[in-house]
Length: 381
Image (cartoon, rainbow, N blue to C red; front, side, top):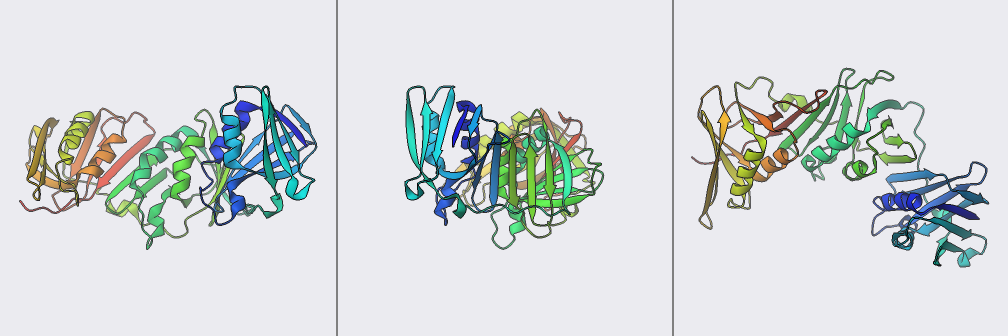
């Protein structure tokens, strides 16, 4: 079979598919890309997988002669395309010669030849049953929310549900939540999902890491899911993956609703002070003590083992005027502050033994509410 296709179009698809493919695979065929050519529709579908995630791109070649399917090594195909300038490239797949089957990539100044493998060995994705739930979401919202939340996921073999990101729609608003037990991020989005019933699923971490790089922010995405599988579609791209099974903890129960105290601070100033102090804390817990005053927030860091000590202060607006000291993991504080874009944040707290939250004072996106929770660390006065 022969296909003529734009170098840029096929290179984008191949590069993104390589994000899914593992460097080492139990099945060697999973190091390949499955190419399926439909001569009648003049379409070409490229698929890559790690056996749990399937990423597919459907592209329209300039020319198609013959149809069928074949597998070609993903890494070598990516290298073959990498140094070419934009041009139509010609792909000739000889699938009739068994072990001698060849893939030839012809371009203006030469050609590359790669052995083909039998596509019959390539594992296929399951179909989502008819009882799926369908959501239509803004891709830009999903993209920025996943980037913001990924760091808060856990690495817990005993509680795998904590290793993913929870999407939960209750019929009124959509919560996208991540937590490792010490920090929690809840993104509450006002979305219009009127075409289907409420539901929830837990996206595995690898998908949450890859997906923002795949999404085009100029168009919406369709999200279809049931109890075990989820499929996300956007224009020529489809990604299907196995969900993390289990029930996500009741995250709303740990977020304090009516903390009696709060102060407003410049986010960049608070972030800079935390970075100045955290390097001088003990590496085992990165304890930073926040000294909250009526008009000043002082951050203290100390490593008793090596006699390091550091402090930094910023001005705050604290209408309550109460003095309090709260211990926190400095790296977690930095991670949360660095993933916000707003100029000012509001810190809500009760006492030194209870979780406190950080919220943007004036959110950039009015349809979005971000709540970041931090568990305190115990320290000796």
